[in-house]
Image 1: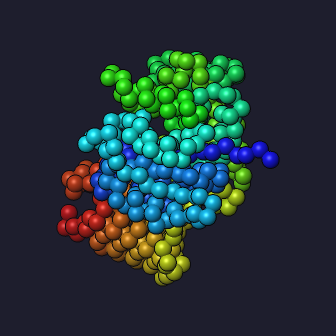
Image 2: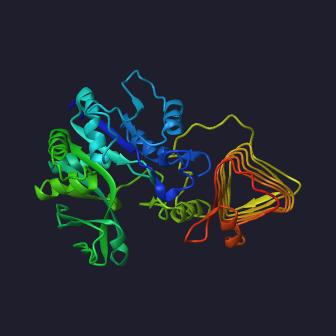
Image 3: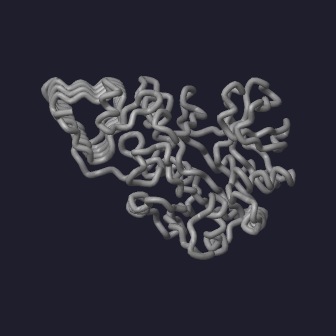
Length: 409
């Protein structure tokens, strides 16, 4: 029997997440809750683990305590077969400096590659919502014999200028890698579409290490995976695109197959949550053939009293809807909604309290926010701003963690 290739998976989870402020004021972006009971990091880790890639290092940096704790407590696998998910903080092995970019983060953590001694290195981001059988992408990479494979998702050419774009030939060999081009190239089989980079890569180990070494000693480099490492493989004719459309995930529906969302802004984060609560969801959390894994709090089931109700919503354990009316919303654990209150098109994280006769509309309330009786959030945006709340371009009001809203405002 042929031996399986050795694979090390590296998850890049060190970004600041400035565009998700104030949700990232007290936590790393990959630690931001998503979908009620999960965190963003759980989606990429679930994809890797479900793909039987179970030697995983998560590179962290900014405000990483809650992320490190979540990984250490939640992602504990049997070590009998050498499985692990381990958070790796900035080690400063090359001197007293932070990571200078995503490529530098891996270069400063080269001991991980040396110690594991893999044949292939999988490098994925930690911030997106999707399902993917990474094993299929890995096999496509092995079959190609090339040094690098970059996952690409088809997007309308009219919208492609917002992304890093992959220009590839009919054999999927990458011709050029373009950063937000004004005139994006179409696909050979679909001129009205372009390949947007998903920020997910597979590398052959020796070629990858050589590229990292060269980048580290280039004084003009940005030390970025998409900005430097991938273009170096493209220039050498040693890179291909992997079409995300070709990835087949068990249990996927026609509607949520090939779903991928970058939730890097408040509006995108809110929209992705709204994708979850449709009767036929754009992204189906209830696919038991390819589950999203996490640790769940030991709490009783959600309780609805005094004609409290929730329609087209996800309500987690420990929640009590006591006479309130909830619609198109996602609740984390232990949310409490009192009588005569309305919550619509909103995301309430764990421990939020909404008093009587209150209104929460198109809003995101971070953990342990308290909304007193009669208070309105998301109804008058100018009033929200005057109270110090963030209001996005799309009109989403965000109330920061632990805020007790004043009833007098």
